Length: 308
Image (cartoon, rainbow, N blue to C red; front, side):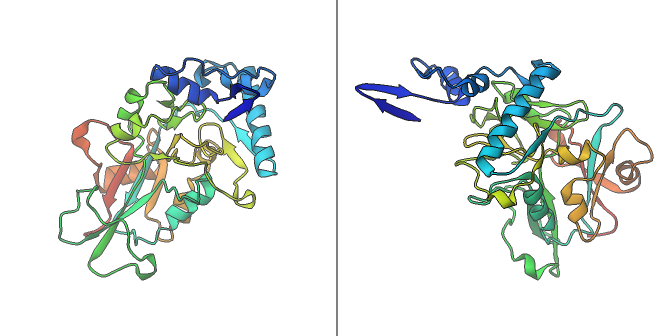
């Protein structure tokens, strides 16, 4: 934001814009001249999330909750539940059951506070004609009438973040704003993301979304139960993606898309637990992972319970 004061331009920018300018060598004279806004400076000099101690994280969460409350006129709780020991999350999707209804898409939007104008979806459901080539994700059909499903001679394949064990998006990030957590979830710190979109270019699954404008969501539509690394309100100019509903799964719940699926096509659980349903699917079904030749090692498994 630029403000004119007399003959002097008083320029106020946020921390993310300044860091992006610094990364591009364009940050000269970009610091704000108004130094009285304490909360601005707290945000500007916020340390990397993984370098903060518990007390520092607590203060950051309080500041962000206050900002969200002022914007949306309602209390928003931003949690920081940590990864549980002995847990490595994995996801399974039964393509022989999926009917392409997109209820997973809509449940994800409601749970994770995605923008509704413009629309941002973390899940894309692709439609393929049986018997035809279906491995080309980029050229597949994304737009069809969900009120007509299931359609004869077609099958459907939802695609979202594959939560790679070897994520190329993490290696490409110049500010370390994205990383892999101990439970396998690849997360993004929106306060450190500079919107360069290198991660989007690096992701072979097209799973990341960029906020071209300030995310638009009515106060009554905001889900107030959020996580710092997940579904908390975002900013213009940052990238976001699926986080396995980190605010739910780290509290012992299923992701919203799993609960919303009317045919039970989605499976979720702990890959380290031999008795989990995801382990059962991997060990007893015809399983494959997308683009395995890229050595990203996705923790998202597709399988067929019967022929398609």
